[in-house]
Image (cartoon, rainbow, N blue to C red; front, top):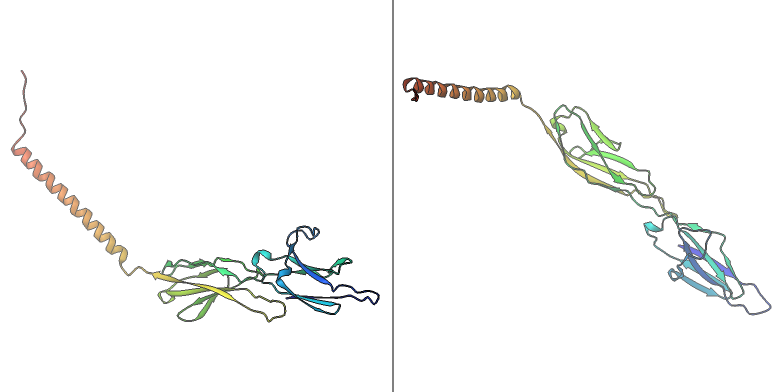
Length: 231
């Protein structure tokens, strides 16, 4: 909310009360011709030769960095306010979803938390193991070496930035996302069991092939194929 007050002091003649007009300048501070008139967002109060105008707006993120000023005129001339206010639009950080992860036992887990910066851009990151409510990391990338079965479960990544609006106490909004980490392991004797199965299957196939060739050879010896002789 912005407020401007102007008055006329003239005892010789009647002067119209000042008229206050509000403008917003986004990109060209030195050029007043393209500024946007936002007086419709204001309320003026005239008391004698004094005019008080109060501007109330809800700026969007696209209006971040815009300049607000007012112009005062009374029919004999106009002046532009010396004080110009710059809009600093505060925006909370927005987190992106994290996919579920799978990791082998005794191996390292590495997950990165991606987010869209807010304003101000300085962001705090906190990783939380849900089942224990324990903080397990404070960097953008979470790395847990030597993962165990007890580390399996849901994790949260929480991000926040501190907003300090004018005339109000600081606020710390946050955004978070949750994902599941599956820890897989190989049981004792897994590799020997697999190779025994493969070896048994291959050995059985070889025996069948050899046995089949032996039967064919015996049949061939007993009943040799006819041979045509040309004389």
